[in-house]
Image (cartoon, rainbow, N blue to C red; front, side, top):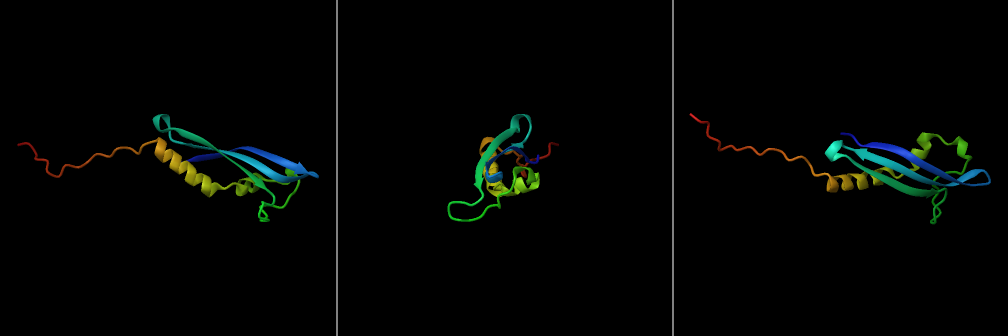
Length: 106
């Protein structure tokens, strides 16, 4: 099954009617029944980080698109975390082992 990712939370922190920071939550889901696993990833993204790197230019919250919000999320890092969690929580299916020495009954 494919991993489903859904942005479930986006909280803007405004100053002078412009977003200065975003808090994001993304829900990851994979599997069904016994192999179902879900995890919520969370991060805060400031317009400019503590080292002076610009993550985004502040603008009014109504001017943001879903694609722009998702682009700010650390998706590749979250993908790696989720894959690791899933692998440790849901064991891979056991494959049958061939027996090349099987003798056909007469």
